[in-house]
Structure formats: C-alpha cells, structure tokens
Length: 159
Length: 159
Image (cartoon, rainbow over all chains, first blue to last red; front, side):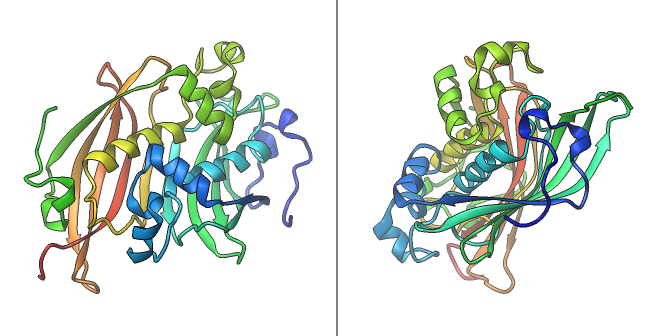
C-alpha cells in the first residue's frame, strides 16, 4: 500500500484525522463469476450480469459485474479501513459516480481514496463534512469506477 | 401506480420510447431487518446497519439500511420495469445521489422515475443517452433517496 497513513486506528479516528490531499490505498478484493451472478440475480438481473452465454454476444463481450456490486465492494473496503468506527455519522450522498471500465470475473480490485475537503460544520460545530474522491482500480491499475463521497464525521474536540 | 405508461413492454423497448417529462412509478419492496443486516454484514458493516442494540443509541435511533442497499433495491425495480431488456447498453454513471431519510425495517419502498432528457448520440447515431431522476419513496410518500441516472439505449430505427 502506498500513500498516506492515519496516525490512529479506525476505533479512535475523528474529523480532525481527515486531512485534504492525503491519499490512501486499500485492497485487494478478488471478483468471482459466482459472486457477480449472485448479486445481480437479486438486485440487477440484466443479462450482461447473469447470463454468461448471452453476455458474450453483448456490448461487453462477456459477463461483467453490476455497477452497484462494484460500489458495494468498494464500500466494504472503505468501512473496514477508512471510516471511523464510532465517529461516522452517516453520508448525505455522493456525486459524479462513473463506471469507467467493465469489472470482469477474475479481476482483483483495490481502492484509492483522496481526501478533497474537510469542512467543520458552522451550525453543528461538533462535526464536519469530509469529501473524498473514491476510485476502484483493477489489477492493471486502471480505474474502473470513481465517485465523490460526502461523510459526516464527529470531531474529537471543540473548535 | 400513477403517471405515464410505456406503449411497449421491456422486451420491445428502445431509445425512442423514453420521452422527457414522462413519469413512472413502480413498487413495492418491503424492507426487512434480516435483509438490512445480511446486506450490510457483507458490504457495509457499520454498527448502524448491523448492530441493533448499538444502533438504538446512535445518530438514527435504530437500525437503518445501508444506502447502497437502498440503491440496489431501487435498481431491481428499474431493471424489472423500466430498462429495455435487450436495447440497454449500460450506464456511464450517476449524479447527485442523495440519501435524504433513513430506511428502516418495516418500510415499504416504491420508486418514481422522471425522464429528464433523451439525447441521440452524434458519434454513434444507433443509440442515445437517457437521463432519469430516480427517487425512492417510503410508505409515507417521503423521498428517502434520489439520484440522476444516465443510461445508454439502442435506437429502434436509424435517425
């Protein structure tokens, strides 16, 4: 893993620990055909995600993961490694989610998180909003998905 | 169900069938505690999604669904009812995803899809991009999540 390191574990992490321009990398998550099909049968049963033979004839030339599955796999790495265990107060949303390249069975994903902004709330000064560029990369270091996340995080100490 | 109706089934639906200002509603999806916990254990194991006793003390006063779970449930309704079965060519991404209200066990979700734009591609005139405001509503008709989706859809006939 390259890039920055947090000085504190997820258990003791607060708003003050999120510093703009810090970059973190986490992974890896192997992507299997069985998991692609299982997720998509439940939530996104388009043939490109669940029907191998038809997917080969389709626009991606084979089975690919649902974009929502890729997002969910990224989220697991974010929760395990990046967000504070107690001080996370939820997310108002995300912006500019882009599915840039197909994710295929056998791919191995990692994520790169670049902190863009950390702004303490004026109305509720016990917390702040952290904006993070979240990118999922495959084993060739190509970005397969990117999004900008907002997270509300409690502060360690008063302003 | 209120709003517009497609003249053709998902099997025979093409770019030309997506008309700006048409509005569709689909549902319902009951949300269970077991499914909230199951999804979150795998993809988003924050205590507000997986640990009932601790979640009661947390910022939402109880267990809530992972935002990615809500998105995945919405996607299932979109695939089953809205996107063309064959003419869908994938999505470059989404914009302005907002988690506006918590989704709790016992909620029943439906979706409202408002077509914003349908633009035939200049470079590849056999397809177009459809932009849709996708909203998830709970049983009180309150919007719990919204996003703007882009979908690439094949045209039925040449321009």
